[in-house]
Amino acid sequence: MDVSADHLGHLLRELTPQVLGTVVRRFRDFAAAEDAVQEALLAAAIQWPRDGVPENPRAWLTQVAFRRMADHIRSESARRRRESEVAAVDFVAAHTLESTAIEIGAEDDDTLVLLFMCCHPALTPASAIALTLRAVGGLTTAEIAHAFLVPEATMAQRISRAKQSIKSSGIPFQLPTTEERTQRLRAVLHVLYLIFNEGCTSSVGPDLRRADLSHEAMRLIRIVHHLQPDDTEAAGLLALMLLTDARRQARTSAGGELIPLPQQDRALWDRQQIAEGVALISATLPRGSVGPYQLQAAIAAVHDEAARADATDWPQILALYDLLRRMSDNPMVTLNHAIAAAMVHGATKGLELLDALKADARLTNHHRLDAVRAHLLELAGDREAAVGHYRAAAGKTGSLPERNYLLTQAARLSSELRLVNEPE
Image (cartoon, rainbow, N blue to C red; front, side, top):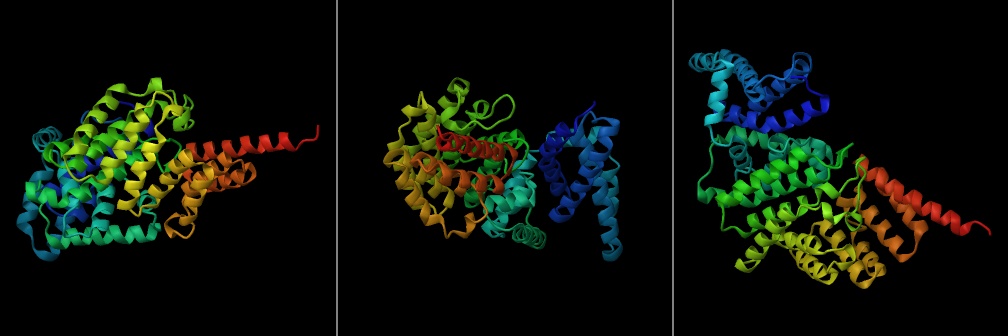
C-alpha cells in the first residue's frame, strides 16, 4: 500500500505507544525498549515509502523492535553471562510476523498499561507526566516543555531521570490493582488532559489540530472512566473532552485557517457529543467535591449550550473561573478568567487582571499572554497597542494557523488605523 509522508507520520505516532507497550511488557526494560522501538520506527520511515506499508504494520514494528532487543540483550549477556535469556530471546525474535500479530491481539491494551506504568509513584509527578507524554502521547521533548512552560533542556533532563528511575526500580509492566490505580489517577488524568490539549491545538506545525492525539486521549479516558466509575474528576475530564472536541469541525476553515469561538458556525458542532458531555457533567457535579476538570467541563458546557455567541452566559462562566482560579495557580486559568471578566465588566477590568501575570516567568515566551492582551486592548479601543501585541504573539507561537490568525488581526487593525488617519 502506498503511503504519503503525512499519513505515514500519523500512522507511526498512533502505533508507537502500542508497540512500546508490547516490547516493555515482554522485556521489562523501559529505556532499552524505547531505543528499540525508535530504531524500528526509523526502519519503517525508510522502508515503507519504498516498499509499501505491510499488511500488519504494528506486528512489523513489533518484530523489528524484538530483534533490536535481542541484539541488545546479546550485547549485555556477553558482559553479564546471560546465555539462557539470549536463547529465549532468539526464540521470540524467530517468531513469524503472523504469530506476533496473534500474540498482540490477545493481550490487554498495552497502551493503557504503559500509561499507568509511567505514572508509577516511584517517579515524581512531574517526571511521570513528562515520561508518559513521550511514551504514550508521542509528543516531542519540545512539545512537552511547551506544555509545562519550561526550557527544552530542563524537560530532557527530567525525562532522562524518569527512564533511569523506571529501570532501577523494577516497576512491573502490568495493569495496577484498583487501589494502585486510585493512587496514580491524578497523574494519569493530567497526562491525558495535556495530550488532548496538544491534539486540539498543536503547539507547532502547519495544522491546528492533531487528531491522532486528541482521539487517543479520548479513547483512553473512556477506559479510565470505566475502570474508575466513581471518580468524579475522571468523569469531568471525559465530559470536558467531549464538549471541546464537539466543536472541532467549526474551528478551521476549508483552507485550515483558525476560526475563533465567537465566529464559528455552530451548526457544525457535534450535538450528540455535546448532549453526552452535558449529561455526564450534569450527573457528576452533584456527586461530591468539585475539581478542576469538572469546572472546566462546566465552562465548556455553558459555551456549547449557547445558541449564539452573544447569548453566552458570561456571568456564569466568570463565576466558574473564580472557583477554578482558587484551586490552581495555572497562569492559563488567570488568562481565561481575565477574558471572562472583560466580557462581564468591560475590557479595562480584564486588562487589570492581566497585569498580575507580567512577572510570571512561565509566560515570558508564551504567545497567549500577548494574544489575550491584544484582544482586550482592541475591545478597549486601543488599536495601535493591540497591533503591537498581536505581532508579538505571532512571533512567539510555533503553530502556523495561530501565527497566521494573529498576523491577520494585526493587519486588519493596521488597515483600520490608516483609514482613520488618512486626510479627507
